[in-house]
Image 1 (cartoon, rainbow, N blue to C red):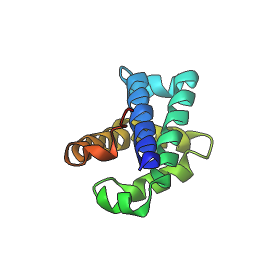
Image 2 (tube, rainbow, N blue to C red):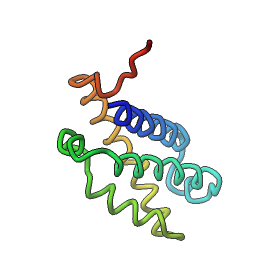
Image 3 (spheres, helix red, strand yellow):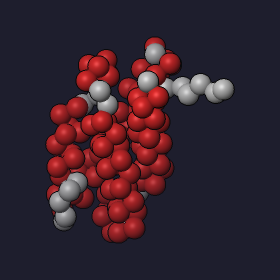
Image 4 (cartoon, one colour):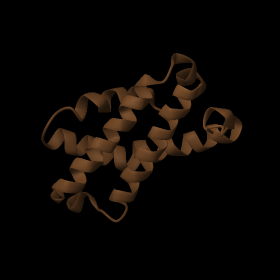
Length: 119
């Protein structure tokens, strides 16, 4: 259970950071900013890796997450060039926000999966 909590925390943290970085960007600014694009790419990679590491039980439990889109994105962000940039822009504007929204919904119904217990 601790591993699942850690994976979910990584996903939420990386997603929040990626969205914060891209917050005031339009697509042109995003494509021009090598530094932001690189960091967003790293953060989206963290999300994709942690999602892929979730056990099958959580994948089934979190059915509304677009698992096939994340799998395809994982391949696209390993490339260089316009395909990668397009995939990152899609992730930042659609996939990451939707994933975080669903994780908030799941946290309301199963908070024990998301909260570390002190002590």
